[in-house]
View 1 (cartoon, rainbow, N blue to C red):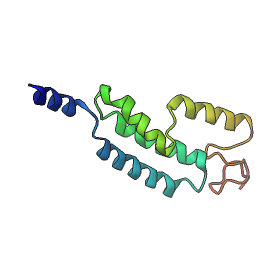
View 2: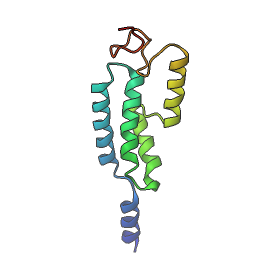
View 3: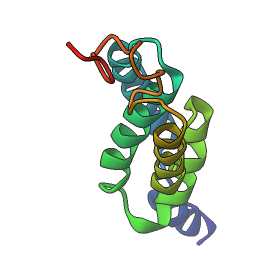
Length: 109
């Protein structure tokens, strides 16, 4: 009887090893596309995690997001706050000062 309950709990729990692999892949993709901007890395990584998290059962999402924080996951609200701060202080969506962004944000050309 105990083994059945344990099996039932294991079937419901998050596969942490598989989730960590998903986070590592999302982090590697974010690093390749962030242009060495940590703020933009956080946006890219967190968006990638959000896309994967929505595929999980609701009861596993909080644990998955807690693990994702090891790679600097930020909630949509935290990312919006950062974008608002950037806009108010002269930084582009890539978290780089306007006029200095390699993507041309804030440049006249």
